[in-house]
Image 1 (cartoon, rainbow, N blue to C red):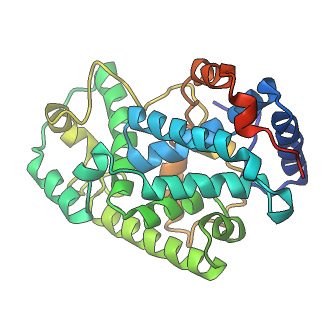
Image 2 (cartoon, rainbow, N blue to C red):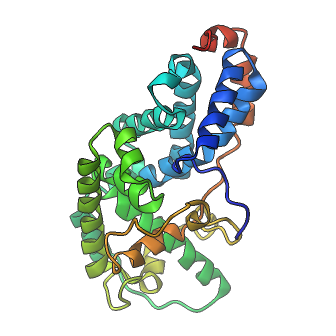
Amino acid sequence: MKGKIMYNPFVEKKAGHEDDIRIIRLVLEGSREDLEKLVFRHQAWIYNIALKMVLDPADAEDVTQEILIKLITKLATYDPQKGAFRTWLYRIVANHVLTMKTRKYERIFSSMDDHIEAIKQTPDQTIGASPENKLLLEELKIKCLTAILLCLDRKHRLVFILGEIFDVKDKMGAEILDMTRVNYRKRLSRARKKISNFMTHNCGLIDEANPCNCARKLNGYISRGFVHPDRISFYRAKAKQIIDVVETDGSAPGNEWFSGISILFRGHPFYEAPDFKVWLNHVIADDSFRDIIHKEFQ
């Protein structure tokens, strides 16, 4: 669904930085309403990064909430003289997802070799062209592609999510991940190579003759519990796609061929964050709220 481009923290615009600073100033003066604004401004991006890192929506919600707690409790330590707020915040995001406890699907999809073996162990079956099966195929395409990301170690997974899916350029990506721009590009290149090698030889979205063809494997993945006919968790018919919210100049893919894989990932939905309003209202209703975050804005 096309629509108005939402705020993108990974595009360097002076107005966006100034908006963050203005909101933070009011938050540090004790404004609960502006804390809500700050959280709502960034929560969808945090949630979508978390979901690509852990695959499970419930885990992604927990991870997002953990990060938002850090945002709230550490906000008074942010110094605008040392850099943009988005760099400060998404460095917190990066550090958290790189060091968090191991999540369920990270144990299941621990390596490319294990994923290939799981494909081999899932029998091929013919399915009918029913509306229900078409819906489940879309669900499988999104979930399976995301599962491939989990076969990367966390550092390469995160740089792929930032650099390839969300088109975070080397300057900002290096600042967020606290590395040089050269190392950011090198790590992204390695991640791309691993993803492309796997998909070239295994993914039916690249070549229908490849072993992991969604239509042939659907029933097998249903039997394994990877796809649930009674619960659609990933496919969104009317949601914005990632490409709709990423202001790309088309330069992210390393070459023309790889851009086809990039298009597949950027064709995924950009999910709205779960409703954190009740949780957030509970946090900021606490009498200690002002004490936690109050600090004279420098």
